[in-house]
Image (tube, rainbow, N blue to C red; front, side, top):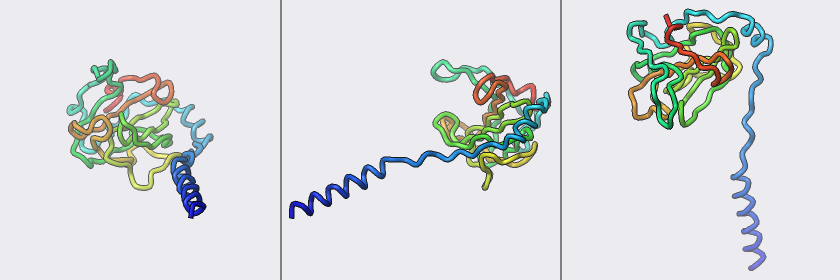
Length: 178
């Protein structure tokens, strides 16, 4: 009887340990020819407002506002009802789709001049959108929500623009949006 319990114990430990391991996340390589073309294209100083139905006079420049833990707001918040369509502000390549504690459901798009466009607090991404996909300016990419650290706020899109790489070289996107 004792060998039976030893055998069961070994199986149990094996199952528990195998459940603790994770498969490495597969990364999709971004198309190098498309990246080179984007890098060589200048960034427009006029980008469309990414939220359906929102006009320029409805925007508030929230750039640099104080945030928790001594942070500053690196973007602007565009209020809209949950589920309102979000469109890409630029031609580009989807570089990252993820869910994190700060931004919730987010999309990163690499655009002209190697600019990085950040869309956060989404209710969801467009169905079928994947890392490596080419997107056009004005193309549907997601929907307004209040995920991440915005779960106790009104639904909105946090839009950020970075000129020195992903999450680096933040600039105020407000003057760009027309």
